[in-house]
Image 1 (spheres, one colour):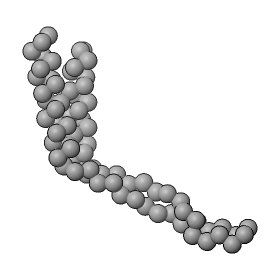
Image 2 (cartoon, one colour; image 1 turned 45 degrees about the horizontal axis):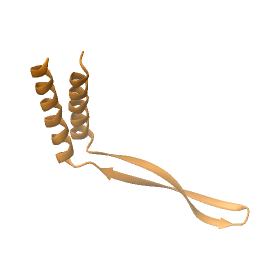
Image 3 (cartoon, one colour; image 1 turned 90 degrees about the vertical axis):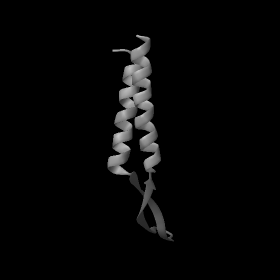
Image 4 (cartoon, one colour; image 1 turned 180 degrees about the vertical axis):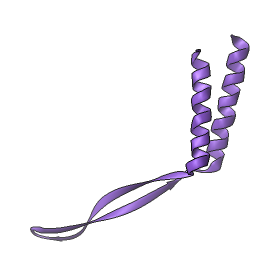
Length: 73
């Protein structure tokens, strides 16, 4: 399988995943209280949204790479 085909398929898969999940979240730990030997931490969740336009661009880009790659070979 050619490299352009693999790149095109990877872009399409990434685009579909962006449409399916629409973003991701991660958790960090922050100090809430620091009184000498006593420390209290709190977990804070952060959300990172991924716009649908990025997913669409990835799918379209993957299709373009697949079509152009098949024409050259």
